[in-house]
Each structure stands twice: as C-alpha cells, then as structure tokens.
Length: 332
Image (tube, rainbow, N blue to C red):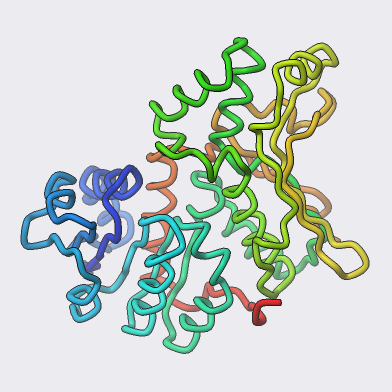
C-alpha cells in the first residue's frame, strides 16, 4: 500500500466535497488501487476555515510555503478558483516537484501553455478533468480521440449552472432571479454568479477544449461571449412554442485552419439532442475527421461530481505522471 500525500488549496464548496469524499471512499480506493489518500495540508485565507472543513489545526495553513517544502506531499489539489494566486501556486507546486490537479478553469485557460511547460520541464502531471466537464469524463475521451483524429468542431452545453436556470425558466415558468437563487442553494452557482451567467465560465472551458484540439494555447479573450442575462421571458416562451429550447451553447469550429470560438444563448430546435439536456447536465459534441461526431453527457455542476473527477485525477497523477500531458505550443 502506497500513501499519497495531498495538499488541498481551498476548502470551500468543492474543497470540502473533495475532503469529504476522500474520507468516505478512502478504504475502497485503497482496495482498488493500492493507493491510500492522505490529506496532509489545507490552505485557506483563514486557518479556522481549514479546521471547520475537518482537518486538524496542525494541517491548516494560510501560506503555500510549508506545502512546497513538505517532501511527503506528492499531489497539490488546487480548488481556490480565480486566476491568482491560483495560477502562481500551481506553477510553484510543479516547480517544487509536486503533481497538480485543478478544477480551476479560469487560471488554466489563461495560463495553460505556461503550466503545461512547467509540468513537462519538471516531469510532473497536470490534470484538470474537473475544470471542464465536472462529472463528464471529457479529458480521457479527448486524449483517446486526439491520438487518431483531427478535431474540427466542438459544440455543447458546458455550464451546468446556466442550463439549470434556463430549464427552470422554461419548464416551470420560474423567474430568472428565483431560478438563480435555487441554483445557489444547490451549490451549482457561486454567491457571485457573474462568471456563470455572463458566459465567462463557458468561455474558459471552451478555450481549454479548443487549445487541446488545436495543439496550441488559445486564450479565452478570443472567445465571442454573451451570457444568459440577455435572455427574456418572451424568448423562453417563443422557444417552447416552437418546440425547442433556449440554451447557452459553446461552439468552436475550425474554418480555413483558424479556430473560431463563441459562447451565446441560442434557440435549439427539438430535433437537436442538445435541446433535451436539462437541469445541471452538460452535453458536449466532439467532431473528428475519422470518428465523426460523438456526444458526452453527464452532470456538469455540483460539488459531488466535481470532487469525483478531482479524486480520479489525483489517482491518475500518481499512476501515470507526465505521460498524460497534452502537447501545447505557446499562446497566440
């Protein structure tokens, strides 16, 4: 049995879910993999938050330094959210010889090539399944597809929060603010929902997916973006009358060797599978030159699906290391 020392950066909704799932599943994971997961550190702005999440006072820190200096920490799990200090912490962890697992789509999408380069230089894993699909096994599918296919289209619902809100508005006639409140109560939306409802979250995820498909870092700033706050009750009603639904779609398409990316609310007819994706579920279409179009479907928001993806990445980081790193050119 090998013990895997873990440092958890962030003990909010997702971090607490990761900690709880490790405790509940630790014995089963050990039986299946031979790896015993041990959370050695928890980092937060206030040490009290770490203790409240269930770690000891000795394991609580407000600084990254003791984590970087601890040789027993093999994997740093970053679930702080936001660009900084998350991006800097991830880079420093890689440089210190730690594997990094993240659910942070903003920091990753803005510093993707830089972080991959640091991971490759120091021969460590950088895994990020939870940053794009939450419970949808998107990265493992992409790795397989890209070995034999050239992707030329990505299209789908990649934000479970906005899909949940639009579903309630369409099916139950719930006003936008009430639908948002319910999403926040269920842990699908943050107290400040701007990243979700204004389309930033979807743009970050699309940037990551398109970068993997293109083999170079495509920054999120190039994504044409419009969120769901512009969607009116009349548009919702009109979509239902026409037999379809309003959905926030993320689309990336390769046109004349140039990737074009956009996120926007659009009418999706009933004949389209994406019209029937409800609540916090995601569905992503990947189109390759050999395989054609495949669809991946599953929960795209929520603490439990996200924590599940994070822990799976921790195990893969230890077992496979840098072998799973994507090939990315510098940012354009």
